[in-house]
Image (cartoon, rainbow, N blue to C red; front, side):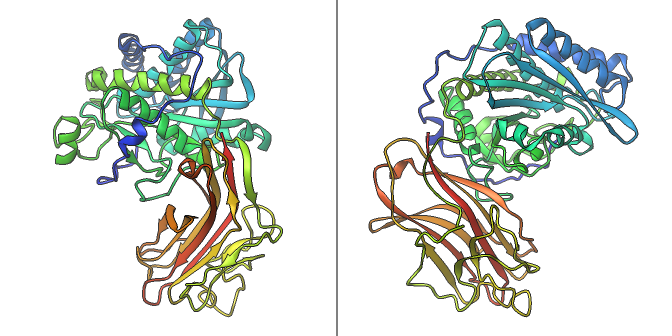
Length: 495
């Protein structure tokens, strides 16, 4: 299942696509699309023999799990079927671990294996399932032994609300979740009228849910780099929470992946970009006609190779989402942040504080007790100490950056009521000499948004070797709007 496409998303900058890949010991293999299609033929046969579908609680789903499991067992994977119950039926996740690699630095690759009851689900999501399976088998064929541990997963009951992947993540201890340092999700990678969308890990589109957890931007850039090598432009798609990356990013695990489109319609501009028609990306979405005839072979071939490229690059020699800490502030002690001198806000100015809980402000920091927050006191009403009258800014002490690949990560929230607008925002900027560069912005909208901690990241490599200050800013630029913001756990790492 896929959310309707958010059309008009900003382009992923093609400079990402040409960014140099991390050094790696072994080049990714070409994935034979004929092998991937052979798996789809088997999934189609399973559905045909079991009432026309492979849905949760139906015999076609368990037969699909068995088919995948048998191939992985024979290839040398350690597999397990994790059962869960939903709607009175037993569902199954299939988890497959490739021996070797650092289990404290695990890269997961997943996609859902179930279909809807209406049809066999060959594009949604036999395509992602089959591509992931063939990449897993290529790992075995090539005896790939990467630095990171590899774990593949095929999820059950995604079509009923991410039930299988949620059950898996919820079954893990805090320590086990911490060991998963990246998750790649592949849901619908062979749509018959395809687009080439990458989950927007760095929030370069500036829409919807914002960036993924720190490390998601690296996943997006790695996938974009592959498409750059074959001259195929990509566009962003939002982390809308309606595919199996959802429970991973909710737990702070970096994520990314590819999507070729569902029931949304391809625009004329997208036809210019990728070819095809202005019809639906997949006119057989969630329908009985989602059969082996509902696959674009070129998209399936390109995306299968992109999955392998990402696995080989990110697992072997690619920088993990975390690295050597260059600078960090959790705000549990005062470190010298100072208020901006040009602020215009009359209340709700940024301060380091232990915040009080209100209907629009969280009373708990993302970690510890203190954060940077707009007007920490509760006041007599929800809007008593929110940002009013303009902008508020708080500046870090000077930070000297080393050379190398640098990543800024942080926790943040922006809450507002429906009287807000896109003129209101929270953002982070880098001040270097007389130059100020915005590296993160989340704008408000004319809707209610409750305070909820999220994570963000930005690439600071262009500032390597410089002395900088970080500027955290919020604005109430709409008339009579309620705006609250906070930032916590600010860290700069070197890969």
